[in-house]
Image (spheres, rainbow, N blue to C red):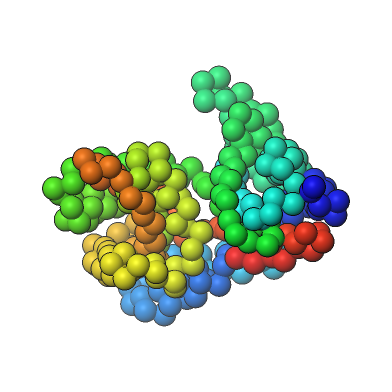
Length: 295
């Protein structure tokens, strides 16, 4: 028996609001990191770039309009309630799709999704496998939705390497460095590095993107990966790419890692870069239909 209170209309409403929030206001951990970078910067050009970014964030929030013209593609994560009482995955998918189309019209969002070959555009950010929804089993008493709008500038810098196990952590560090140097100023730094380690090729890519949902001021619960996150953050900020690739002290705002056990003969490592506009939003939907929003 499913809830007669949580309907597709409730999910659609939550989807529209999630996208509005994600596109027009940044989470506090990202804003705090940008403010810290601005105060620490001593060179005029990168300091000016950071000031422009902070002004843009304030204007977007005050005007309730998207902070970037590239409003991204709609990527969702859905944690199902443990009792399975709040709608079926197919009903949730339909509702999120309707919400994305509605949000495209009223937020508004730029219609970004196109057919990969013909480049035809449905005009509402839907299409084959769009919005893309990751369903995750959980022990939660509620349904949780998270949206991660992903712009092309940063997404185009994604990278995957099937490192040999003998390369180990040294190989991981080298791959991350090489990827960042190749990206340069293209993904609109200062950036957040999402890194997926282990699993298989597809699992590591998914983990890299999922890691970007974690606030950058929260280290991994595993001490070994927490130490690697901090080391990469400190070392890579010394390479001098800086805000918008124009030099300076801050190239990265954060490094987040997620991992999975992998085959004994493999060591997949995936990187998903997020620009300074690290947009994300969450909603918890209770069985009585109440919605609680957050980052």
